[in-house]
Amino acid sequence: MIDVKIGHQRCGNRQLNDVIVELTPPSVQLLALTADGTKPGLHLRIQSAPGKPAEVEALLFGKKLALGVSQGGEIGTWRFRRAGGQWKASRV
Picture 1 (cartoon, rainbow, N blue to C red):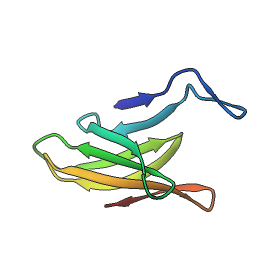
Picture 2 (picture 1 turned 90 degrees about the vertical axis):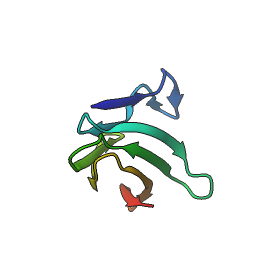
Picture 3 (picture 1 turned 180 degrees about the vertical axis):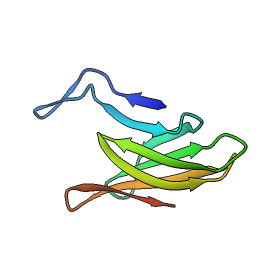
Picture 4 (picture 1 turned 135 degrees about the vertical axis):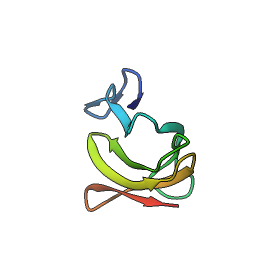
């Protein structure tokens, strides 16, 4: 499991010491988590371990998102956006 955390800061009334994203399975490697430069949202890039395909899940700000299957050694990119008050993930 990989956790990406931010420091102890505040954003409005929310304490920003929460985990931003947590990836499973543990064999998935986080390559990048960046703000989308053109639209509101985030980009996530991962690489799965060589070998068997893995069913990848992300816990984004505490919300579980199924990202789908990543083939062994594959690099994949997803865009996260908020829609209707919920986070949505789409592969790009």
